[in-house]
Length: 314
Image 1 (tube, rainbow, N blue to C red):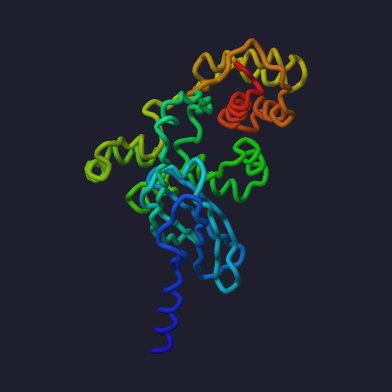
Image 2 (cartoon, one colour):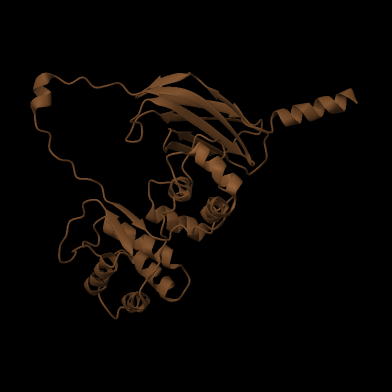
């Protein structure tokens, strides 16, 4: 009996990932070395996320060794490493999650008096384009994670549209001070309905997030509206089959943006047209959309990419 209990205790000890950091504090430019151990299962990857108080600053997916050991490194530099404070390493494996905190310091740059007097040129603001209705608020983030892991066509589409971004950054919840909340297993709509209909949950939420709404925390605007005019699908079909050219199709995209279906926040040059050829992969998107094989949101995400990269200029 003693031997059995000892075995159970040993197995349970590794149910939650073990995380180790090479240091407890880092400054800008340091290399963060993360290692740990999990209960090994073949074919399962370890998800490692580095989070500031407001955003994901680094992410990696790796397979552990057969002994369960894993390691990864991150560079503490770049546009997302702007604020000093407490950062968190979050490791997930087989549905188990563990966290470990560390301190990060971004040195304050000392400028001379003469340098301060110089007028710095205005830097262009990168356009931020959001499409109403994507991701679907009735679907949990885990739905999209599973599609990304198990559907090669969806993964290829996502990686082509959101190059440089992970599926977790685009459809996942932002990290909050409440561990495990919001849970990616539940949809934004689930939390909104709980807040609306459950007094106890509403009271708890308001105590935890006194300056935010439930819509802020789950990343859903107060008014969710997806309304693609019927002519868009017809023009997508005509363009995909060569009945109209790129310029004619781009002009219809301009109408789509002016109607507010795509909301653009930032500076985008305004011109009468674009010289760039629209890539063939988006023509495939248009054909699939017109045939009902992909959703409106998938089609609009492609448009977002074209506008943001000035392939279509409004």
